[in-house]
Length: 176
Image (cartoon, rainbow, N blue to C red):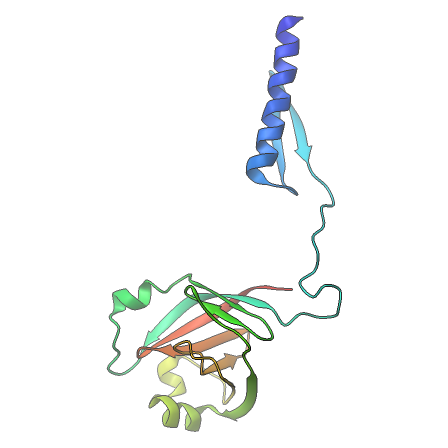
């Protein structure tokens, strides 16, 4: 009897520890007795929406997924590789990248021909960057973070910035 009470108390402790470590909304199997498992699952935990219930949010989270070295970059391959998987957080009024934040950002979008724009702005070609689109959405901002005064929005929810002669490609990770 005493062994059974200890097993139940130990199982309860394991369940609480699993919830504390894994967080709400997680499921975990906790051993109850030899060969038997108890499922611990926390259902329907909600959090406030990013918009506060006022419609669709413009917030997007992005991750550096790749890069292309430009002509005569200031960075080395090692510097460019170190940027991989860094996150970018953008809202209707902020840009947060690499630990730096721009506030009260304004965004102006313009659709331009890829070949002409890339040649004049960055002295490169769509082919050199692996861009297949004939037109690009160029977004100009008042943000002073390097690379974010203007950036490219590509199809398939990708963004490209040029930073120290390296073109960083971002892919969307979450949109809410």
